[in-house]
Length: 411
Image (cartoon, rainbow, N blue to C red; front, side, top):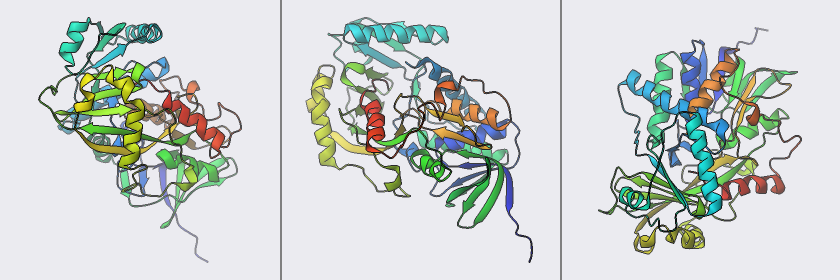
C-alpha cells in the first residue's frame, strides 16, 4: 500500500476574518515561511464586514491599550507598503460623562491615555457641542476628546492585511472548510478539510464565533459565547459634519459615529441575546439575528437614555438595522494564546466587540508565539483556562457572556 501523502505547512490559520488576516500578515512579517489561511466562506465576510470598527486607543481595561496602539501602527505600515488607503478616518472620539461615577471612570481613562502617551484634551460644553452638533452636553460632568482616535473600513483593513501577507508568500484558500483539528496525544499535528488532511507544526484557531467548535472537538472549552451585536444607520443630514468625532456615551450605553454624511448609532439592550455555538450556521450571509421590528423594540428600550444627549433623535431618519455576532467572555477580556497541555495550538478569539480595534496587537502577539518568542504584550488576562472548568454552550455561561455586552459602555 502506497504511503499516504499530506500537504505540509509550518502554520495553518483557521478563519479569514480580520483577526486571521492580521495574524497571517504578522506571521509572514516575522519571516515564518509556509503559512496557510483556510476560510470556508470569503475573507472578512462574517463579523468583520458588519463591524462599526471604532479604533479607540485608550481602553478602560488598560492591558488592551497596547494591542489597540499596534493596530494604528499596522494601518500606517500597510498604507505605506501597499500604496492604498485602508479607509481610516481619524476623526477623534469624544467621551461624555454625565454622572459622578462616569466622571471617575473618565478620569481613569485619561490616566491610561497619559500612561501610553495618547493625546487627549478636556473640553468645555460649547466646544464639545461645536465639534458634535447633534450633542446636548448640558448634563455633562466631564468631556474628553481623544483626537487621534479613528474608525476604519473593516473590510478594506482585513483585505489589506491579506494582501500584504500574500506578498510575503502566505497562501489563502477561501471556500475551504476546516472540519476538525488533528492531534496526537498532547500535540496538534494539523487540520482536516473535506479535501484532505493538512499537516502543520502550529494551528491557530481564529474562527470567530466558530472558534470554540473546533476547540470543543479537542476537549477544550473556550470561555466565550457568540452574542448578538447591532447598530442602526441614520440617513445623512446637513447638520452632520463628515469630520466630527464619534461620541462615546456610557450613561446611555451608546456610541454614535459619522457615516457618509449620516450616523451609525450603537445602543445596547438590557438583555443581550446569546447563541449556542452549536446552532450557528456555517455562513452568516443573509442571517439577520433579529428583524426590523425587534430592532425597533431595542431602540425604544434605550432611546430615552440617548435622547438626553441627542435631543433631535425623534426626527432622525433611520435607514438600516444591522446585526451580527461577536464573541464575548464573562470578564470582557479576550482569549489569546496557547491552550494549556496542548502543544502547537493557539487561540485568538473572544474579542468582545473590539476585534477590529485590537486586530494588530493580536496579530503581533500570535506571530511572536508562533515564532517561539515571548509575546510583547501581557497575555495573562487572556488565558483560555482562567475560568476553570466551564460549559460554554450552557445557558448559564452564555448569560454571563451576554451580560458583558449589555454592560459595555465603551465604543
